[in-house]
Image (tube, one colour):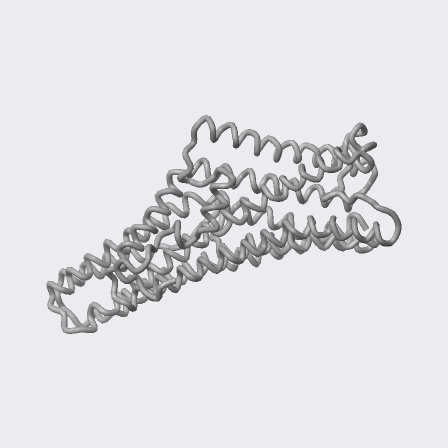
Length: 403
């Protein structure tokens, strides 16, 4: 990436900066700019139909096999995949319900990047700093998603080779599940059935991974963009009274900053509207998924099985809640820094009434709490701490109940 927004040097926009996110969202038919027509509907019904039918098989195994056989370990494993189904489905719901707003957020970012080409180099560097952080988040989710998806595949291949070398050739499924009796009898002997079940769960694995890679980083990327805009506004405020500006120049610059801040706050409001319910579900699902998965891994280890592929689900659950909480906390700090910059910019040394009135209006405007909220709380590090406390309590309850 270019170190500045030199005119014509490089096309800086959401599409070019976050190529992986855009390609993945288009692959699973959920990109905000994807045309929704009959062809799209047919493709989506087929893809989601397979995804949903796999979820039905998981529920069947939990209710009619695992719980009846008092197999808590397998019930937890299947339950984890069911929770993932609900999370992915809810993500689709957010992308469809707030499609227009998400599209506007992306267009606002593109517009801001276009305006940034005319910014001073110092301000361009601020924008680029937060862009690179956003790209880092996208890379983190790519790594988490690929590792989580590939470990299931690697484990099945390695175990198949191991059994072939040590004893006799054995087909190891991508994910072990108890099926209805007609399928259960032939799943290990009929090659066609084995391949069908393997591909079935492979699709479930890839389908969920694509959504996590594509949609999970978007909220944090939008937050970082807002942080960059607020930092630019903060620096502009601090520079207004530092030079030998006339009263007219001070008033003009204050008006420009006020408009800039209002645009950023509207961006944050749209972000809040789109992700409020999603982050509520994310935090709640982390409270359940992390302790249940950890319990399942430990119990399987006691039985001589080390299901290391589920460790990526634990890491993914922690990442899913930690990154938004951290960057929402950074957004809160950026809003507070802006408010302090307005208060300490040096206005007290100038007695011009109009500029003081504008400073007062800016103080009132920036006194608003800039943060992403769920239904009941701010998304921040304090909320994340509460989630971990609840997850630990659930893990202790599971451990005490089943053991």
